[in-house]
Length: 248
Image (cartoon, rainbow, N blue to C red; front, side, top):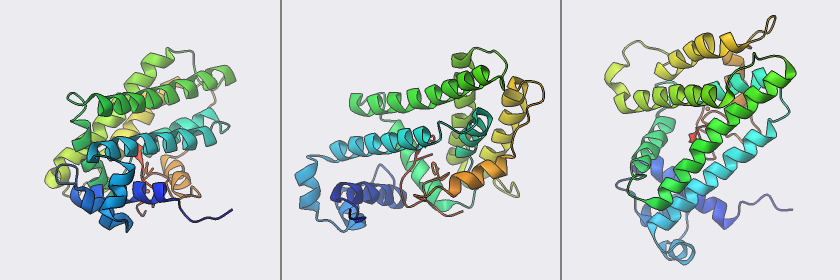
């Protein structure tokens, strides 16, 4: 079987690169064509409008996140939960990753006005909350987590991490100074300490956050924390807002 990327995959990679370079508001089909070395007419052959292509891109990165999450389903629940938290961490100097997440944030603002985009954003949200709820349920069954309301806890954790990433993105360089690892790292560590830590059964310890982030970055396809994603260098494949969008 050939390892050559399909035309569809090349186009999705082109959308990813174009969003990083141009953002959402100024993005054109020609920008995407230039990034993936395809003609604009070829893009329009597959996708009638820019909206069609962006909706397809959201579907693509969410499906990719579903696959990556499924690939870790047999890992220990505590490790999976720390990796999930690590997925949202990115340093202020990861400019490419930040540019992509800024574009995704622009795209998310279209949700209230565009039903097709809203449907994909809702799917991403369900994936994130469902992933955490499944991890917690597995951990409770395995005796490594205390018995808690998994849906409520998942909603709280996802909202905390997503909010931290949005704050770091929207404030961009305004508060950087000497902050080093950045706000997402600060909040991730606090979430592990104050939300995840109290869930642990007696005798269970959390693995180091750095180890979880390193493991994500070693993913074979290069799409680890930035996700997404999952990422020292920016992944070649896009990430969602979580391990999902976000491709992270």
